[in-house]
Length: 149
Image (tube, rainbow, N blue to C red; front, side):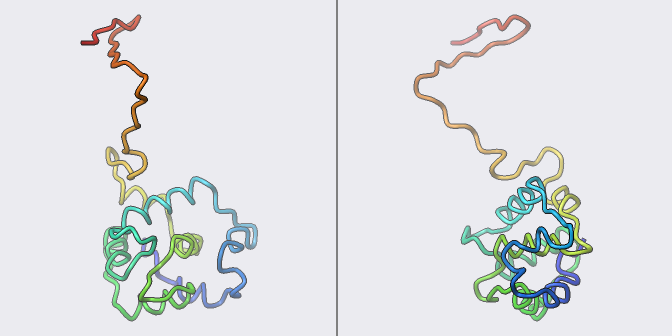
């Protein structure tokens, strides 16, 4: 799915009051927590510098992976302006959510392309911090046979 196809036209036709979240409830459309979380994970995955915004190169990488289509710089500038983002800063998480709320986009399909089976999103693959008070207990088999060192 080309996430940016039609986004500029769709967003330009929305009133600016819808930018920032209200669009998620617009005309009976509800952006579920699961969808919002997937968009966040995709945004974080492509936000290589961790600044909270997708630069031209970062969003270009997202589009190439998910649709195979390259993005010319002028299209990026047009989309940023339509979403209320400054092109030098990049596309915010909220703006990417607005993009995925537009017709013709499919976060589930794009999420599967970004995180194929077996590959986890950053926050899903983080190892849990071990509690200092816990012992290293390794149990195997039925009944939990302790094979700790």
